[in-house]
Length: 125
Image (cartoon, rainbow, N blue to C red; front, side, top):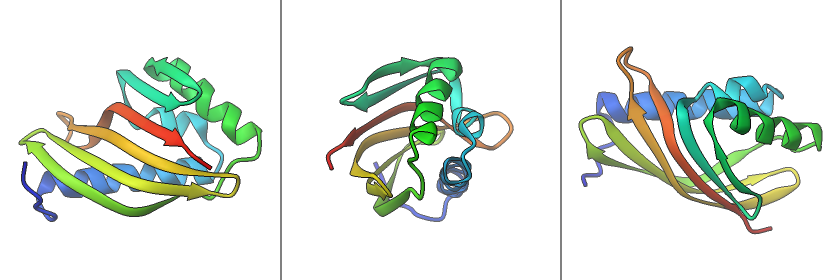
């Protein structure tokens, strides 16, 4: 793994991550789910495991409906795994919770955008 910050892959991951946060913060659960690959797996500790756009969208919609918003990443780290994929780890906080992103596996798509294949995060506070 390398730690190059300005490769096209890392730029695509940063853009996609920014779009996910903007969707969440504007209450757009479908926009959140669209940042995942169709068969993505999301481990949301302690809530459970969610697979695919429909389950992932429902999870984010419930959080939004419960009044969660204003997500921010704290000290995000980006690591290139190979030419097509990168790992994002970070702390996070929002208005009613905080935690740790153990693993966001972003994969470059044919159109040049990055999408989440695996998302593993934990709410700790």
